[in-house]
Image 1 (cartoon, helix red, strand yellow):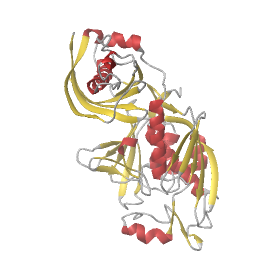
Image 2 (tube, one colour; image 1 turned 90 degrees about the horizontal axis):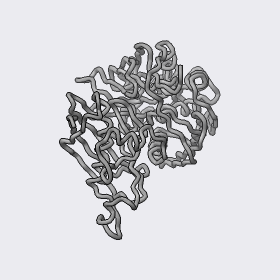
Image 3 (cartoon, one colour; image 1 turned 45 degrees about the vertical axis):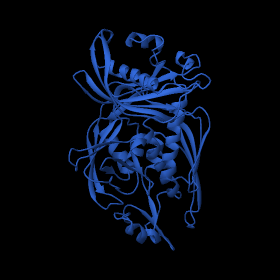
Image 4 (tube, helix red, strand yellow; image 1 turned 180 degrees about the vertical axis):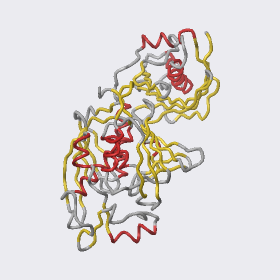
Length: 428
């Protein structure tokens, strides 16, 4: 298999168990998914079987685990499943779940890694999305967490944990994240907790499914279980959690992550910072301005897209507009205080969306996109000369040459504009 391509599971495979926090029984099934669709949880126990993408945009809680949600549908404690999927190279999968929480199994990542090995992996046509760190980046959390990220080939995680309990204390380890290393050195490490915290957690509706069968429990005298799988099992589990949380980037990460006292909240904050840094970076175009002019009817001064850097057929597109002082609209908007007109920001966003839509029809050079409605338009901050606008648009629905799209525009990783579009393809 060429690892430049995306992978999905080769066949369905099912596991059962109980949620460590909810205490509710659930069945989980891995199913193959289309290229470019990512990892999605499907709540089969809810009306309409809603799906929740495993994406940073859907993180709703990071208290003793990472929870994803969309509307009324939530999935608790996703990090173990996501770490197993990421470590084994699975880019696209449907994770069907018959309850509100992923089964904890034995408290480690091992059963999920084994299930994916049994299911097998199938190569797909789409290219893998990669986030590379080009310069050092640091993130600090509110509870003593800190992270430093530096360039690296592949993903390496070095972490330090520090607990007052004498059987844990301060531990450090460094691990290269690949299928074999994760499966052998990280996957068997179980989650852990303290007996003194049990009553308070239960009062908050947490740890209702925890037991010595799925959690390493420590009391004042030591470990209540039969023993540890590694002398530093606590550290190794924390590193596995980092892998799961960082997988919410929706891409393969090439970086060395150095974490001090990591937490789920800190891991997610780091992933968001990496996403912002990726948006700021000058990525290689997959469609340059020459090709753009073959698809778009616009010409100077109304061609407002310079290149396309990401494209997932029928799903998503990322386009770039470099804003320079030479733009003709700056002559009158405003002299001495140049600001890009908001309507042109949305026009540029729409042009990127038009490129995504034109891939859905035959003979696109004979077609043109008419935008019919724009809803929920918001401008968050001014765009000025020197800014690089990064537009991300997602196809929400496509039926009979009419589509709905959701778009966002970013400058330096910060949201500057957003809108919902409805458009139709017509003959030129």
